Length: 148
Image 1 (cartoon, helix red, strand yellow):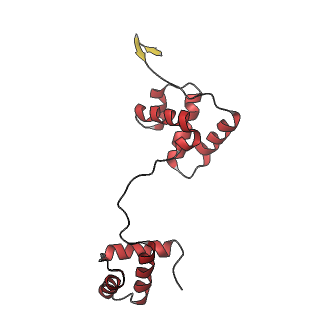
Image 2 (tube, one colour):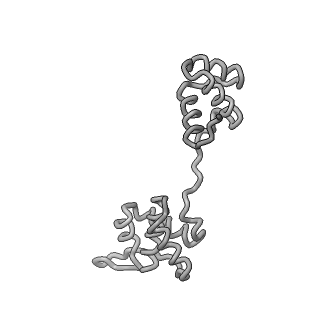
Image 3 (cartoon, helix red, strand yellow):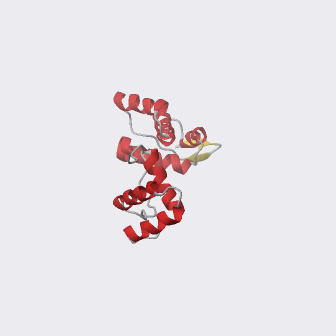
């Protein structure tokens, strides 16, 4: 407990870090491609240095409850606690096979999207929008897996 003008300010810290954990956290903080991993790693390092949660929250520009959660996650799960949890979302409209078929149809008739959509509906039994088809084509070409 810290005291601020006679008021108790509860704080908690991460468990002691091994040299290996400290080194890996420092590497995460400095070089991770994921901003959230960098920020969380920094918070854990600051907590290990006995910075109070309120100060870590200011430095990391998040709410103190968020920092508290990061510390709890670190103490319970270690490096896995730095990762984002899976977020639920809408299931894909097309299966991977259907998306592959839709892509093949799209590249056969690139100038006639209304024909593409009609053929996709006949082949898959699913009616999709031109936006969905556009996203299928975009994902396929961006990933470098387009058919030749």
